[in-house]
Amino acid sequence: MEMQKDLQDIDHCLIGIISDTHGLSRLEAARALKGSDMIIHAGDVGSQDVLDNLRRVAPVVAVRGNTDTDHLIGELPETEVVEIGGKLLYVLHELNRLALEPATAGFSVIIHGHSHHPSIEEKDKVLFLNPGSAGPRRFGLPVSVAILSIKNGSLDAEIIGLKA
Image (tube, one colour):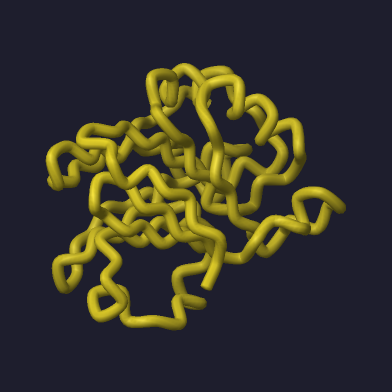
């Protein structure tokens, strides 16, 4: 399977979730993610500068999106697995490429992007989280990021709208 980032022993963790930046590093996104223990970028990063700027806020785990063709960004993995506080998180860009049954595989959270539609849904006791797009405004959709809190084994997710 993919490379695993292991933060298993953490009882309380804030994870900043961002996607579809398409090369745009928004100051408001960095502010909204400040205080995160980790940032997960769910693809369509657009440039290495985006990841470098996010790393000034917290350590970053990122996956490649369908538009990530730049040399460095294009080498990002298609999926990642993150383990935090006893919870397994699976990260990919396009949800329709999910090639496993999350609950059966032991995942608590599926983090994805691509659609630019922010959403938080639970299916079969698995949280599906799309932070929306923090890049250029498209399709009349909001510009947003998300925060995932893992505290004593409980999950809580919130979409944070950004000024565009």
